[in-house]
Image (cartoon, rainbow, N blue to C red):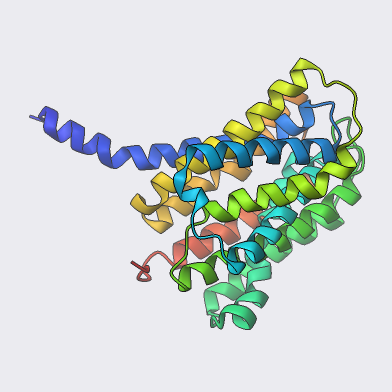
Length: 296
């Protein structure tokens, strides 16, 4: 018979995985929330990042430690990711924006050996083929405008660029980790501050925003970014890498679902095929790496 102590122990082990599920779901709401605002892309980028930076800086002491030159370089790449994703989401579908950003591992095939001196492995080639095919399907497939995606061609290009900046962000975080300063939160805070500063000139002047827009910005900054990173930093070290990678795939899967439920935005056949390729490539790499020893 299972005792209370056994139940508590099972709950203690299940909690980090549940926190990662919540993280992925919070991240995934970004596309629908960004599309729901009447604010411009520059205004969303400036104010969301400002709220997120303030929330993380105040609530998490570790976000205020170890700001170095490496932190600044990684934060610059992260700021580019934040801004490009919002501009892409305002122009193309949520699915295209999130899955093209998820092609970052394809860029890492080139950046890793050059910057991190990482060796390419056979599984990397398979991942690259799948993710590259997915990117091609998104970029070359049907790009018919929708009410929530008025300029999909430009949006797709911006989303693909956000995949590159996200790959550069991950490279910067890896270099920080190798130097013993692997805390990602200072990068997140500084990146949001940079994104706010760069976006603010394009966001002003502006009329008094509606309460709906104010509420959405507060949600995006405090919850979709702030709380999501709070959950992520507390859960990621207690969940095996393979399991964490698969759980976090909930973000790109759920992101288009929210936009479909809230805005009626649909994925065409090209996007569905591209999404399947990207998901397969990322999942394949996570599966192939599951038996590798992880750094302590």
